[in-house]
Length: 272
Image (cartoon, rainbow, N blue to C red):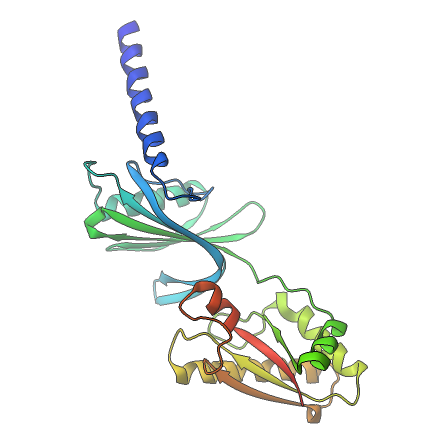
């Protein structure tokens, strides 16, 4: 009995040692996401975190999910047994189910899943396997609107100083429906115009370069018109506003980076 316990303890110590060894090789500043641990014998080669949108596979195609994104790239420790893509998918599928979540897509090298936390926050997970199982990438998006607190006074100051203000409103994915989290900012636009009867503005929509120029231009125009309509509904004369969509034509940041794309997805209020 004592011998069996000794063997078990030694085996456990070996596993802990392997995990510690793998973690020691992680890229500087990188660690596992608090909700999802790594596969055995994998190290983190790179990681990123920012407010962004990520494409997730769903049964009828794909959908973009926006929020606080964590991206972690894992690589197999040299000489370790290589898992199959199925093993990676099953590992994360089971992790999601253990949290009460749902797997929405599971096929080939990809898995997408959704978890609703006890606090009511929606969290999406996507895993994709590369090089037959030697590498895989994990994306975790905690759904939330980009926080922006702006008052009518702030807007007026910006318009008087710069002639415009960039607002990071959020909309339903791929649509012009204004997210409820952004309605307070739209309300401040209404207050701005009501408090300054001589002020007229142009509502101008902008996107990043994901998608086609034609679809981006149309979507940005629809979103600008949706904001204008909401302000008019709030009691401001339509003659004091106009709406235009620029799509991806006027970036203010580098579309090659996630932070840059987030900055480019904006609605500007421009003083006429």
